[in-house]
Length: 231
Image (cartoon, rainbow, N blue to C red; front, side, top):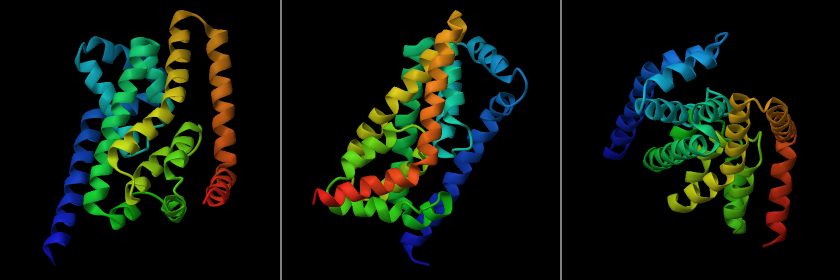
């Protein structure tokens, strides 16, 4: 086994060790989210933890992006209920930046085989086609802006293109901002008694997300078609 292969193998083991450690630390909160009244208990626990509450929420958001088994909206709603629309959104965005940078650096070190073991790679060739067309930047911004698309999968795939980390972090997290703000603002509305307003916001966001899920193949084909037209 060559030195590069040994390094990648050790890196892969280290990655899973880190993920297992975070899961063990955060799991009581994650498991409680899916129990009746769990969200209220998690909110009370995090609020009662003081400054550590920020770290708990950051840990949840980090885990959500890196492992992607926690629905992102659940963490965003909790953030809005805990810290209000603006500070809650800032914490979530910070968690997205940290986790995205971590994944980007990891993918660059461990390469395509690591990604193939972590996420579906059906979109990989499309990203490489966008790269060749010179439209990768705008495509990444649009994909991260549309609710319902598999952003966490994209976070693993984009680092396999020639896009640098700074550009990726800027575009991907800029695209996340509207969705994060809607979730945290609507969640704060629930705590503030603005139930109708929150219900409308959640309803519109859910509808757009469903449309994004249903039409994700068409969206990708549309972007692919128009990126080739611009060549």
